[in-house]
Length: 131
Length: 131
DNA sequence: TGAATATATGAACAGTTGTTCACATGATGA
DNA sequence: TCATCATGTGAACAACTGTTCATATATTCA
Image (cartoon, rainbow over the protein chains, first blue to last red):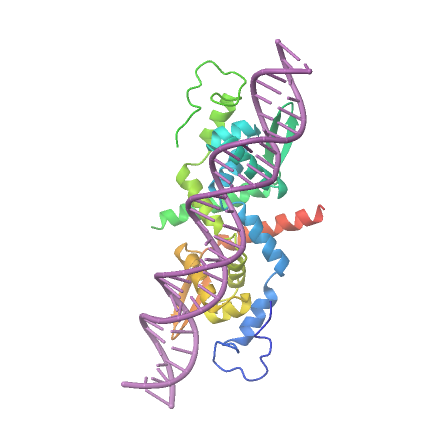
């Protein structure tokens, strides 16, 4: 990522391209920003909540321990589809699994997940109320 | 969405398809699940956090008020690209804008956003520590 | 052992999404 | 008014993603 804006020098003209309108604010904002790795991982993390099948699975497991077949029944998605999504959630440590016989029981693997979904619901309820 | 599982009757066989392994657990989990509209809106909401450009924008605006050009400089994405993403965020009430002359100044429009991102960072830091 | 069952997974495909390019709009100031 | 500038947006395209289908793996039980 090349930085076209670092060479500000003293000519802080009021132009947007090549130089910057508010160089000091930009520099300050940049310095406050988490590093690129963190930002990337954050977006990957939230991506997991950004699909209605997965969020159904997460909400379903928030309070219940269920096998794949039951999850499939609850969220109304094929066993295969659920299994693919569970793999994603597993790989990202959002859920964990315990094998009992033929069945795999899934639970949440993170105490933050319920919190995050709750805040999201608050946002949506407030937005609904504000209309 | 047709429900293949509601017709449980008394034949609660231990089979996954057509009937359900643990019908009572499934019914309970279903009843605890928020309605489909809420789940859909939740996933749409979190989708906004699931892109590294947008999360950079949100984190940038978390504490600063900046014009489009400056945001573009901070996050390292073209003005047009930023503008498209800002529209999405605006339409979903995550940011709001104030016009001053030619410039549009953006700020966060929701006190939950910082909280959500903070929890996400906690998750990632803990996951990093746990490796 | 062999049939039945639960889960996992690779490949393929359709639908979605982020970026870029070109241009429109609207404001400023000479 | 005209040139310049900041921002907004439609169209197009490449890359990504979620689902389905077919099949593999692994466990149970007769």
